[in-house]
Image (cartoon, rainbow over all chains, first blue to last red; front, side, top):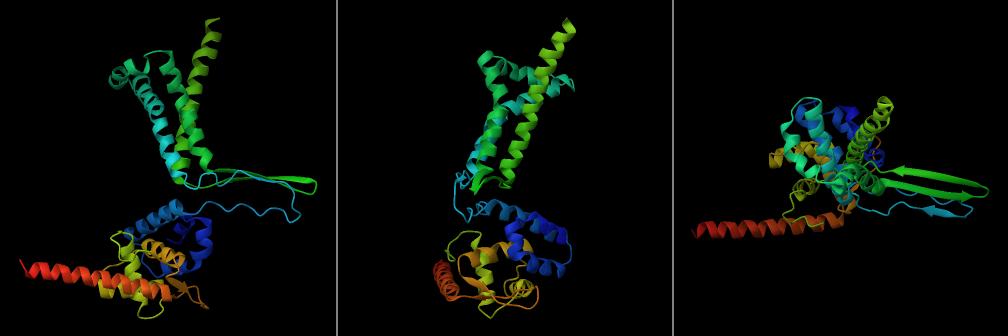
Length: 192
Length: 103
């Protein structure tokens, strides 16, 4: 059960890890206790403060920091999930029809999705827009020049909602691009 | 922190404050104590979620300990918040009792 402590954010573990571990050692590993620890870790991750920026160099110099632009990344994460929905649904319906032979849901939605070029382009763009919306608020890029050296830092806040939406968006986008590649590039090669 | 509020999250926090009103305790002792006086078994995740909030709000503070189990105690702000919370609950109980007797 002690391994579950790894689910908590690093800063939390640094502060409470040892005493929490001591407490878990005294408790029997019941399913309810395990679930409670997992939910506690999720809550700790969702309420954790944003990652602290690294200290500027002692010598001073240029310090650019694009972190902390979004103190609460949950609303853009939810917006990304909404934006992703039509594209992801189209992919699922297409897979149902062309991979499993269940054509009903796709055929029912086809009048909407295939209403015209603009709708098709918008559907194609949804995973890309959703990815940017989900990732931007949890991404931090900093540049710190100390003396002659320029140091870059990249920080990603581990927000489960944003990262999950970003992952699904990337998968849907990859499926769309893969389909376009197969259809247009390989299809033309075959045709010639 | 509004201990007397009806916020669901404040309930474990109130139980912890009541437990610590007796004296400093570490996590496991708090769980046992709360179960004995309130009949509620707080899970470890719930317990430490509430402890973290109370510490952040300055209502409890950790004490030095040679072992991994760290005891916590009420701060003056914590004692005031608990008094206010108990007073709210007392008023609520009195009102409920009076209205039930009048039925």
